[in-house]
Length: 143
Image (cartoon, rainbow, N blue to C red; front, top):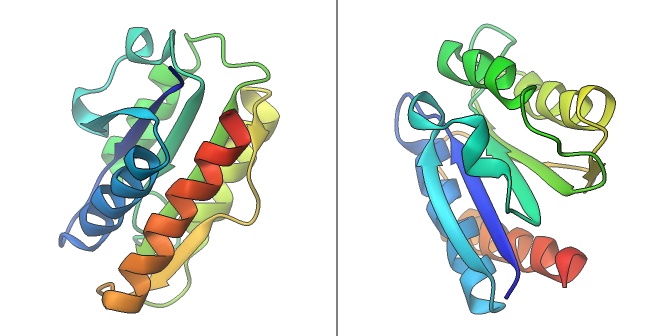
């Protein structure tokens, strides 16, 4: 069975809502999924995964601190050629998704799904549907 991990961090719960909906989409597509907050994630969590999905809200035009810290941890894992995807909520600008995408592509050598998923503010029902579809899109890429 294909396996994926969704690692996220959230300040106000918006990115967490997105993460859970992406997990639901992956599971609906038959993928075994683990959901973990960035603050608790380790490089070993990534080793048997077919896909690594990272989520962070944009805070002051960047990632929030826990996700920045996790990216240093992620460097310890060999992710070359694995599928990656990025998502996050934002209030004004949404740079976190591009930062995560570029890090997965250029630093880790991952096969990243582009564009990542950005949702402004709190996800609506339509936004959560987009998240589930994004999960299914990731599943198609790893199957």
